[in-house]
Length: 239
Ligand code: DX5
Ligand code: ZN
Image (cartoon, rainbow, N blue to C red; front, top):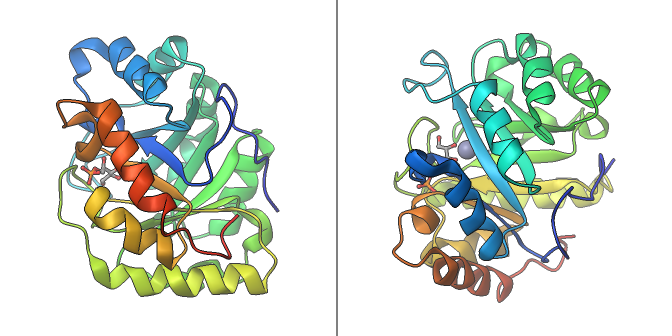
């Protein structure tokens, strides 16, 4: 299923979607960070929630998501890097999350967790660590609207992209086509104009960028550079 392909608050959607990660933004002014993403024509905002257990780092919870919600109409793509995400889904949905992505490695009953997200009216997503095979979603296509393939080990912004993950995206794109699945394949970690082409050619259609967007002196130009690199190499099978 596509689990609701329309992205609330966004303008016309780009073929390859760009999701700046707020993790690399200047938190002294969240409203300005949201405006930057809007000015750059980004399709969504990516919000990294970390609990200090699933990943070593701690970031923020529903309170901050709710503040972001009040700043922007952009689609809020919430990436939960937490243990037992099922306990927190309703809180993040209430805070304004449009998409809720949980890690396959953190869910014993993954399909049940995805069904709970859909029940809350959000787009259910599954994130896969670099060491987790794409077969984690082989039997649950119908329950997920997005697969987030990590191109770094989750936990921090600014890490080095792992090119070995490209083959996983390629296999995932082929499996998605075989299953007639219409969801999104998102990649996260070390995405920049230098890496966007190869991962998009492999089959990614949604790119998260933290330091390559907010860490640049001109994020609007940076977004354009990432998008141009990606769209030139778009995989023919991608939506
Ligand atoms: C990492 C997070 C990413 C992070 C990406 O665990 O999931 O979303 O913000 O940052 P960059 O683009 O700098 O690698
Ligand atoms: Zn993320």
